[in-house]
Image (tube, rainbow, N blue to C red):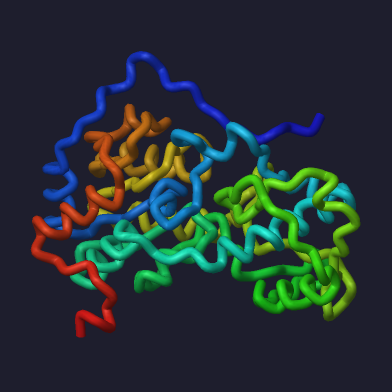
Length: 300
């Protein structure tokens, strides 16, 4: 039987209460060795909605699963039509104050690393280096037959040529870059094959129902082992791909700190959960640490 991925989680009544006190997070950053684990919530201020927060896209949209994508040409046509339209907006998103603050913390040697569950590349655009993209990146495309990787911008050009005049108006854009379109709007959208072998192209992201590559997971586990603490930013931790690192850190006795406005599946493992908007919270932390968070080029 094909299993559907876990898309939702109901908070238990006995979860510890949230706080607005940034003190424990400030102490961790001041000590250094903080490993950041970020989720979709850090990108909402860049115009990319999250999955599960207030107004999250799961209320109107079921993400594509790996099983559906690989098993149905119709599903692939629907995905690529929606994703092609979404990429026009998604690809123009800019880093926000939260991304810039994380990059500034790294520049000042306070972080041991950054793991992101996001596929938007905004941490890197803000200046963070060595970011582990747990779920991959929408900026790359991979052929499921020959394994060739290619830039998303190249695929976008080919899809534009194959679908001249494709200009539907989407109801919304989702965290995976997928636009909300009806079947009528998708119409007879033409999917292009791999330019090398004619095989099926897939974005280089981990779909729901697909496993994160084992070597990537082990790399993240080593980062948790080497960190002094774990700081979760904007993730509900509903899916195991991120929650496992919270559990690992807690079992090792490392402080787990969470900044997320809503309850998370990792709250019971955390020293505290700060229920504040991420951009404002991280900017406040930077100010208290006397760290500037502007563009690195502008800061000299």
